[in-house]
Image (cartoon, rainbow, N blue to C red; front, side, top):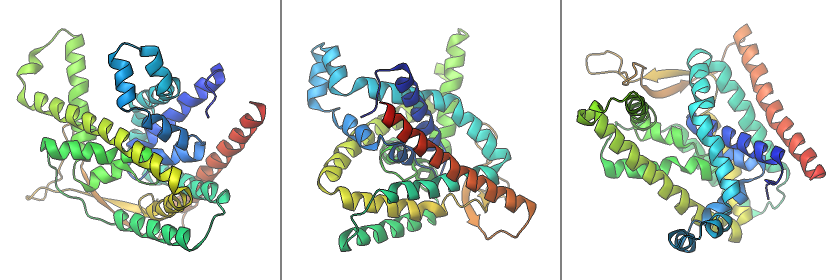
Length: 338
């Protein structure tokens, strides 16, 4: 269980939330991997599981302190605080870095994912026919998802709700990138760019005393989309946590083997050497979102030639590995002093 009694323990948990939030925003990277490697995955799942009928009964009857303690509120609130801060800070920096230094950013992520596979696997020894089969199935599923072609954008609110349920899976399923799934579903720009921009603009207008946006049909439509997407995400978060809690309790070895396989299979998504393929209109012009950014359709992967750039990229892969190993060493050191 995470130590949230000391200031350093609380700060470290917020930093873990920062890591999860940043990972969830980037297509191909999973916040669940951060939770798994950082050692708080099971507590995260079991805490979310406590958001149930009993919790709502405590909340509705005004027993707020009992509700907070029942759902492990301090742990969840610190973690989600980190994710929220990340969404408005770290993830914005990542957006900039991916735009200008895409190869090197993906190289760091690739190294971190490889390091994560090593980290998870080194403490797992329950290999048998069932877990080996689970590993193989996880790899096949990860590879299969990595090479799917994206669908077209769909703003139907029922589909948006479904996207919310699916996208949040990256927080609960290590290796399963919710952002990448949104790209495959065709709604990454709609849900993580356009609707969020609409919220930013609306908050800015309200702070400036301008409420004319309520007459802007497109703005209101985007805010509805964001609200439904958020509701779907919350639904998925609670639903997946209950399911995963049961699976982890009864089939922990099979689940761990599947997760290792899925992370291995999803390495194709974060392969550093890939060219971005952008969507085009019927007249051949590039499609752009409301902020003027080009809309990604998919990636074309390739084997790099030996060059200075390639050597730098390999260096960043090593850096990614070093980050994971460093976090592991730090975590082990903290445990000895707790």
